[in-house]
Image (tube, rainbow, N blue to C red; front, side, top):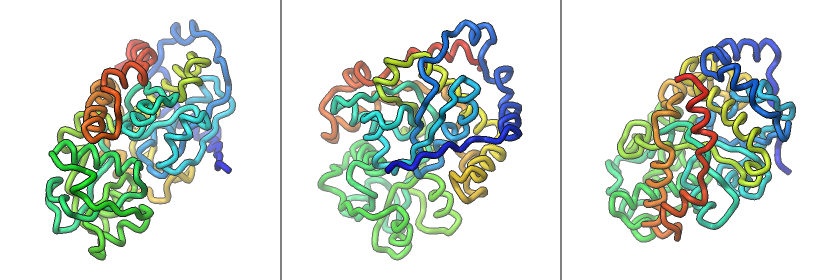
Length: 339
């Protein structure tokens, strides 16, 4: 059974958060535009919650969604490997996470639609002293949580980009992410790709070293890592709700950028993560609040090319973009939300 969480804020927390965000005055909507919008088609929305905390904007959006008119806001706790399937099956309505597995779902004809970007970066490749570059992963042992998991797909795209064959040049082994740090420290694996807050934990404990930091290293830092996606049927039936959900998430994204300490405290207080120090470090490192500055279509094109080269998808980037993206709401919000 899915673990559904409400994560309702107290009235004081909500008033504090909206003051923090400056509500509509700072990020937001021109009042005449809000007044002119038609009513929501649904007051219920189910949001995908994963083990990574880089989707902080989605979690902070809780009562911002209620301010948009949603009275039934649910967080559905999903492992990262299953989140994409749940969105395609309509078990959740909206999610924010790594773009490439969404592309696989679109390629397979599943009803998933990409709506806009959230942030760049967040994933880091940690390795032992035997690996100093991506090309040195050849003939090495790399841990992943599962074939087709976000970390696996990201590494496949990276290896393809530097000319390696992911199927032949790397020895893949599957382990729970919680075990991979220990295995790396013991020298039983050579590398693995990981997300916050484990990235901050590994650095603090001096386990391995960072070979690729997608927040800083090109070309990965030039593209969105995590994007806003939705179930296609939900978008089709609820265009007003879709736009308002995006608006709340983008305001949450701005809060992460402008108030990292308060945003990190919220994640801890609401049980999304136990470590405040790691959460605030992540908030300050990741480029939140830049959803205008990166091109989501370029991101989809870039990862579609890499996955096509690796043989993981059959369709061209142009077809993926045509079938699996909808930038209408993003373009409207770029005009309505203040820069």
